Image (cartoon, rainbow, N blue to C red):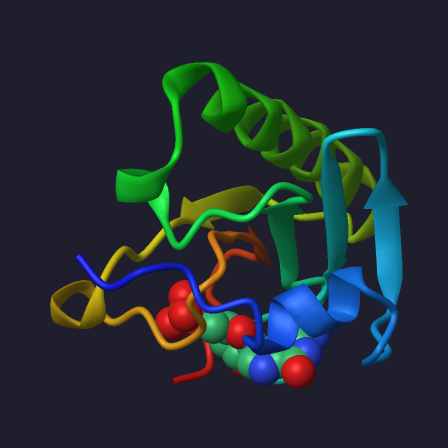
Amino acid sequence: MTAYDPNNIFAKILRGEFSCHKVYEDDHVLAFLDIMPRAPGHTLVIPKAPARNILDISAEDFAHVARGAHKIAHAAMQAFKADGIVVQQFSEPAAGQVVYHLHMHVMPRHDGVPLLP
Ligand code: 5GP
């Protein structure tokens, strides 16, 4: 697997070199709105520690990201009056990963409303 690249866009967001619409932050994770949302409230949850994807992080550290996604999922259900939630994570090009800093997508869903492509 390719090594972590500290110049990826999410690393720049973490360093404050690139802006984001922050939704939540704690000692371990940052959550912010996706710049090309597939649904209203589409949020990305990332670890503050460098990790390329789920194949590059310990179970212990991934638990912080999962806890963040859990928090965002519950908050988004209320904030967007959603009917359901999709949580997704893509690791490596074969899986469709585009940005190489681990992130979990949290997407509120509404009955009868398809995700944007
Ligand atoms: P993935 O790597 O899981 O395929 O998707 C990367 C996600 O990051 C995409 O949904 C894309 O819209 C989002 N994204 C890419 N660049 C930026 C950015 O600069 N800011 C934000 N907020 N989201 C981004």
